[in-house]
Amino acid sequence: MAHPWAALDAAGLTDQTVVDLRLPPAQSTSGLTGAASSGSHARANRLRELRRAAGQAKHMATACGHRNALLLPDPADPLPGEWIVHLARVTPVGVLRPDMAALATALNRPRNQVLRELWGTDPADLAQLLRAQHAVLVEGPTDRTVFSVLLRRWGLGHCTVVTAHSKVRLAALRALAEQLGVRTYVIFDGDGGALPPHAAKAHRVLRTRQVQTAALTATLPCPSEQASWGCGDPGVVGPHWAAWQENLETELQTWPTFLAALREQDADLSAKDPAALGAAVERASLTDLPESFRQMLERLRVSEQRM
Image: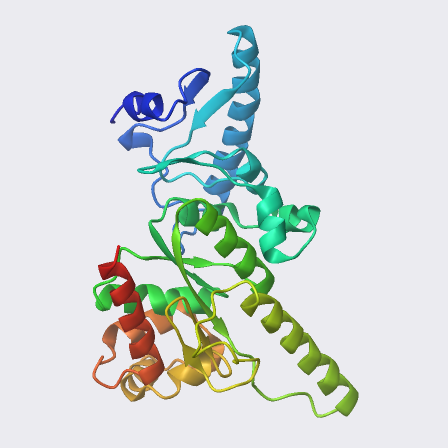
């Protein structure tokens, strides 16, 4: 296990108590932050260990006459959301730290709201995001399953797909990632699908969709081809983000060999079974890939070539 002291020293982070929480390979929690991991109990135990270690490190720092303590988590460790304000990400351009005031300004939201949103992020998702060089941010686990396989098959497997679980958190995680030097690409549903039959309820649902989508796009770079896009408009793919007209499932319905692979498993798209969807994406041909997916993948490839 490589010693990080040289990198920490170069970053000016050694004038404090340093606690190395990285585990030997035989004890590594590798896989605990994985999307398909079933070790939720082990992950919860590790989170308790990390929080306990943080408290002990503070006491140790005080005993050593240091104002601060620096914890080095294991590469596979989840990261508690409440640690965000204390993060230091060491990069080739220096040490990057979150600026919560700047985040609140960028998101046009009160600082406390931004903090609550980030603190509510799943620790495994947060860890994946902050350890990535290039992250693809998506709304839900179905999106993550599909695009993780698709990116690998397209030769972009080094991109990390991270689930935000809502448009509000998509905006917050993207802003945080960009602050900390993680390149991002955002994919989300345009929510142009059917509305409830009752007029009053349909109005409320439509208004909610429009407000949430507009709040997200207001935080994203908008080149000319995306500047006028809005909730329910035809899908659009740009250099920094892509939005489907309705949702991922409607795009997948235009991929014939994917649907055939799904039927071979006696699976149904509406069930949103991650295992079945991942297997179908693995077996489907890329020759009849939906044009929206092809454009998005090519945008990512171009972005990678410019890094």
